[in-house]
Amino acid sequence: SAISLSVSPPLLELMIQPGKEVKQTYTITNNGGDVILTPKVIYFTPADEAGNIDLTEDSAPNWIKYSKDPINIKDSNKTNFNVIFSPPDNIEEVDHYLTLIFESKEPTDLLDDNSSLYKSQIGTNILLTISKDGSPKKSADVVEFSAPRVVDSFLNPISYILKLSNNGNSYWKPIGKIIVGEESLKLAPQNIISGSKRKISCLDNENLIDCKLDKKFRIGKIVSRLEFSIDDDPKIYKNEATTYAIPFSLVGIIISLLTIFKLSITMKLWRRRK
Image (cartoon, rainbow, N blue to C red; front, top):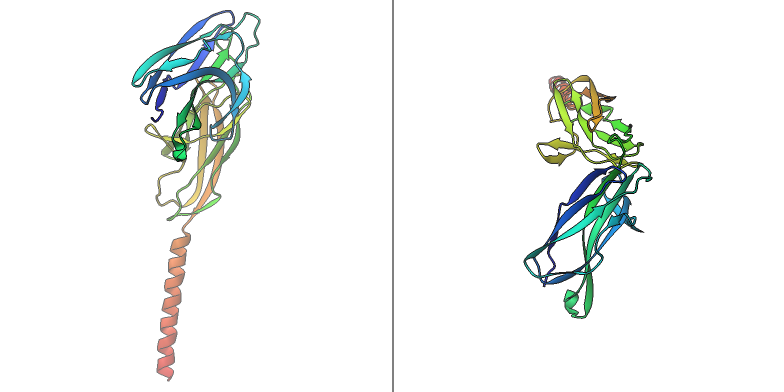
């Protein structure tokens, strides 16, 4: 039967002091057939600027403890799984980006081949910060904040590309807005891990959207201001993008009407002469 698994929480964000210990309990829910899962914790790296990840072959350090025994979960059952984080006193204060994976190798009838062995994985990411004082070094750079240089006043809403990089020791989320006059776009608080860059979306209520102003008539020089902080850091990062809105379509319509009017008069004059 089909494998249907879920793991909660889907993401763990944890800050811990060296020498301390934290136990995290995960809940695995099986809504498919009986399954045997093998757990492992490995590091991940960023795959792109969209927040996707690549899993590595590098196992978690030995101060992250969990049972490596297979887990047998019956259909429609749940089970708990514990992971203990206990970094040593002398550990470097940097982040660890990990994924807890539960893997099954189940016989399936894919392509009507009953002997097929289908590997199924489900994972939950761990963003782990090691910090003695609870204030890890956080730093941001604006890689790109851009908008079209010129748009049609009637046809084109102004859209933005925002890419931020993290050159500090710990992950963070941008908290801020793109401001245009009385309008504003709220930045999505998406995690950017240290040593990476990410293209940031905007928020419409709780939904991720492209950073784009509502379509309406605009004319002249439009200055868009980016303002954001990282987490609860008081420093405000700022940037600007300038766009010129020109009513090309209106100008085109006027030129067309003038051309038609001129042709009409020319035709009338030609008929009179004839």
